[in-house]
Length: 295
Ligand code: AMP
Image: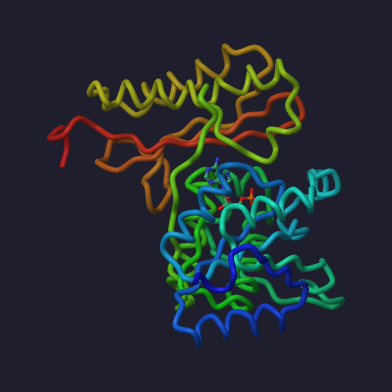
């Protein structure tokens, strides 16, 4: 029989109840998997929970719209919070526990401790959203300390986020392994995102320019185009020539340091960010060169 009975899902609102449940699972010999989210769950989140389910005997999900990772003019207040639908998705995906803390639980009045990965947090997304990654690394540290999972699952969709968290976990000797899972897309290529709910039908069509730009770079690199400025300007043109899209960046970076490249490397990542109406969209793809091109 699975542990606990799969028909039941525990919703925990306090740190202590999460600790108690995870201790019981560990005591029963289970590996603990953890999927941190902000809710408004979609098939991308479900894929992380299902992967955790396959690899771990006990699966905890957190749903917390984390105020410290939103800038003052961002969408914290209007971020969707469909509690019942989210809990049903967690249950159907096989989660054992959902941690649903309040802001006061995570940040009691007077909270003043923050975690920051210098450098990596200030480029790309961090340059456009100052303080964003400081909020992410702080909340993920707290969640890792609360859940004490063996493995935590993140999406490649937020490439820089998983990079920052990977570095943080390594440099702070956190005992939780960071696992990155592939980006789930709609059949037309749009990467799933809770923020896609903000898009009108025509904005959604415009938003397809992000995956189109990335596929173009992927195809050109696959055909042997090694000139980084050529690949980047191909992506930029695709985005800039799509009505309704305001380009923020279209760059090719080292897969680990995320430094922008001037010459091709075997493992590169193409990253794009753009505004469509009032919605920011980001996406990325790992570029594979034809084998033997460079070593
Ligand atoms: P969020 O709720 O936006 O904070 O996302 C929670 C986790 O789900 C993060 O690790 C995201 O990278 C991941 N995620 C979001 N969208 C996708 C997607 N389309 N495919 C795979 N993972 C995703």
